[in-house]
Length: 490
Image 1 (tube, rainbow, N blue to C red):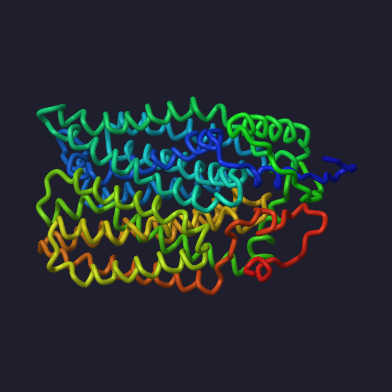
Image 2: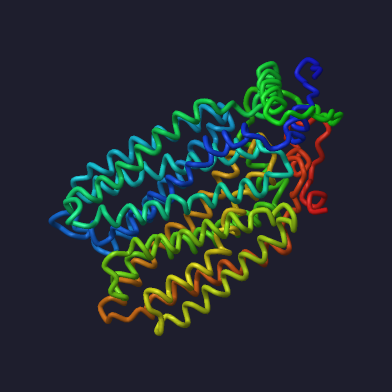
């Protein structure tokens, strides 16, 4: 690796992309990817414990609208946290921020467990989301910059889908925790939130061993440190694989900078890559409305209209299907390609959701869960691919902030409005005990998902098997071109 004054010519990206999969990569997956389990645990606990939180004696006396509001304020915190920590991640590095955001989440979760009034609970939920939102930006960027190109699609989709491991675990945990014969009703829901903090602490211990992104380091003038980290990774991979690593002659020349001006980042998103901006916004709005509307209020729907007292088993089955979909379909995003798979998963799941909305007058708790499991088997892979898309189609200097930006605006549009709309629909429909009153929410979600799938078909980027630098040249690349939307589709 040679360098000139203010410039560096490096082969680090090519060296990272050529590595075979070994145990070291599993360290990255476990240390970084398991945060989605925490998010799934958080959302499921709230959805499963809606009745416990409504009880004024042992809970907090929340209404159905309050439950929806708690979901919305959690998402609002996640949106703001993503924006706040996203720009810090691009400026100060991936590792510092994915430690800080996990600490914020852990502290806020502990405060949630000790909530004494609705305002306390809402505030704690906001800051829990604030930490989780920051995680999305820091973690997705770090994962994509450390995982070899030929595995990036399947790993990213599967890791984002691990959210549903937490969802299933949270649902199953609520079964004994909400059983008054096992634990007092006053303490069961509090203990559930406390368990999330314990899991986060365990992840923090593993995460300390994850290195900083070498790609971030060499762009920010720390090429010596980047070289040491890559050599250490290569030595570990050679030892674990027992193979000699192939040579690579591919290099890139970078103009190193300590910081990237926000004006340059804004120009990148809105001027240099306008088609990718429309694409990412569409994907995030569709999946955010679908998931946050349906899942934040799923437990409430089961208990209010379908007479289910213990929703944990139903939600666990639903969550298991979501994770299975992400896990089973994830390799196809590398083999068949991003555009085809994202288009199919969005359009197909949206169409099924619309059909379910029209059939609500004849569903039972079991049939609704089965329908949801089929829909979200496909939707979970598509939703995970939205994060993959935002993390790989913009230049490295803006990666974390772009993830944060699209997560924030997409989730604000779909993830805040969704739970509020469903909470309002449930409150109105519960007066007549008519479940068809929530069909509007299903139909809106269906339209948004199908629309996003169509946008992907026309504007999607064929990034499978390609280095991040070829999908979107770094802004500091010495030979970068001004427009990369069209070439990247080839």
